Amino acid sequence: MPGRRLLPRTCLFLLLCLLIGCSRETAPPLKVGDPAPAFTVTDMNGRTVSSTEFAGHPAIVRFFLIDCKFCKADTPVLNDLYSRYRDAGLKVVYVETLGVPDADIRRFVRDLDIRFPVVRDEGAKIAGRYNVKSLPLTVVINPQGTIIGAILGGISAAELNRLLAPFLPDTRGQ
Image (cartoon, rainbow, N blue to C red):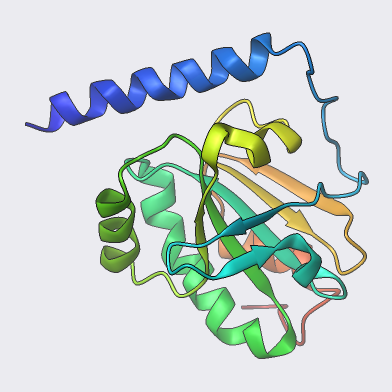
C-alpha cells in the first residue's frame, strides 16, 4: 500500500530536519560564493566518491528523495547533461540522506537510468555540512570549488545550462 511506505519516509525526513535543526553544532548557512564542503563516501556500487574529484571541474550535488516528483522529473535533465558533458569534466552525484533501503534506491536508479554516482549519506553528515534544511536541493559548484547555485525543488535544463555555461563547451541554447 503506497500510503504505508510514505509515512515512515515522511517521519524520517521530519526527524532529519529536527536533528539538523536542533544540533548544537549548527553549520552556518551556505551561500553562493562559499566554498563547497568536502566529503568522501561510497556509492551504491561500492566505489569511493570524493568531492576532491571535483577540483578543476564543474559539479552538481543533488540531495534527493526517491518519492519526490521533482527528482523523478529532473533526473532525465541531469542524465542528459551528464551524458553530454562528462567527457568535458562535469561531475554529478545524487545524495540520499534519509536511510531509505538499498533496494528502493537501486530501483529508483534503475527506473530512472541514472548514469552518475548515487551515494547514501549515513547520519546525514554531508547534508549537515551543506546545511540542507529541505529536499530536494541541487548545489552547483564551479571548477574552483565555489558554490554558484543552490536550487530548492525542481530544476530545469535552462537553469543548469545558464549556471554551467562558463565552464562547459556550448551549453547555450541547449
